[in-house]
Length: 154
DNA sequence: GCCAACGTTGGC
DNA sequence: GCCAACGTTGGC
Image 1 (cartoon, helix red, strand yellow):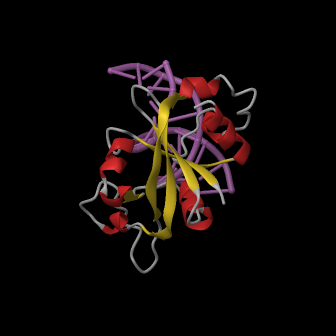
Image 2: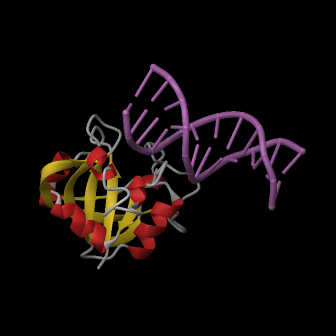
């Protein structure tokens, strides 16, 4: 079983929005980055856990935990010309983009701010992908040690 | 295959 | 709103 971190802008889709979904489940559509796509398509497995991260907002940080409940399948929003993430180069006969379904496991007792995570960048969270300079990946792996450490400071 | 231009991400 | 970092595009 693997651990992940997935980013979402709360103005677009927040952890509260996920909580309000039927069965607290959503498809994680709109990923349009090849590295992130490869993680989703090739490595995310049913039962994997992921931190839900709020990005590009007043208080960026980790806000919750979600579970992968359905493994990768084609992201149909790429086929829809009216969708913001439409991609003419993806078509149903050879889909370029994939998504998984995730279910809310729980909202953290407190938001763990990016700024706080950064204070451990040279210690327990060394090499954590989120803290890499200029990191723009929206889906990234988290080591088991980092996962445990972050839950420890919750 | 190189690389400049451009668009996007995301912290601050 | 600014801007650095990065990925993608497209001319050559």
